[in-house]
Image (tube, rainbow, N blue to C red; front, side):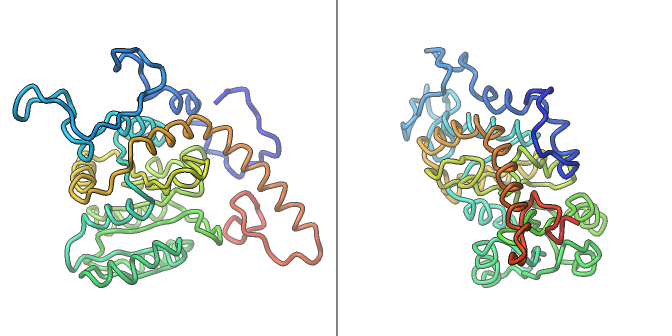
Length: 308
């Protein structure tokens, strides 16, 4: 991002989100895209459609053997997303829900998930109708009040699932307060933040104490309504080892072409999010000036209840 750029209509609402990420646009464009990794020196990573890769001998290969376990185009995307998330690692999967499923597969029978009580409908459906039927205990609490999260933690809680802002009512959660409470209760609890609505441009959950940051990349991260994909980033070596194993074992990988498209979309994320912010603020202000308008739910609008 241009350090001298000052967006219009910018209040203190997002103060603290942008300042540390001054190389965001550069990272989104260049990390993982290094021409030197290709013999052709291509500045845009090629689409590696091959399912299999030649080996020098049994188990002796140049980094790739089968595209489910690793693909050059997918690697480029994962490196770029990790960079903009401020993470060491990222995995790309076939959808946002595939990311949710992959993360929850780290749990075992009897483990508990404590989830924000207002989350994306697909997440709620998966937790209530599938995860809860396979031996995982699922409970919900209002995380906008961290003391309610603290009260809902149980000895078997292994995963805390935060979504902020929530889809679609835009409730905002204090990630640091909730992460600190969860880790104080049990340092082994994994705190996950669904960062779909804010994107890596406006919010980096890992910087606020979360263990995993996940996305439905179908929305803002890709941004062009032509890809269904999920992403999960982490700084923890142990979590990445488990997630990458599950990515391969569950087989929920995105196609190389989808990775190419999402990688391309990521390059304009900083520009698109600025426009979304300004357009959303303008729409909210216009509607709230109408005496007949009842309520706005906008992550950009100070009048949204959880933003006050």
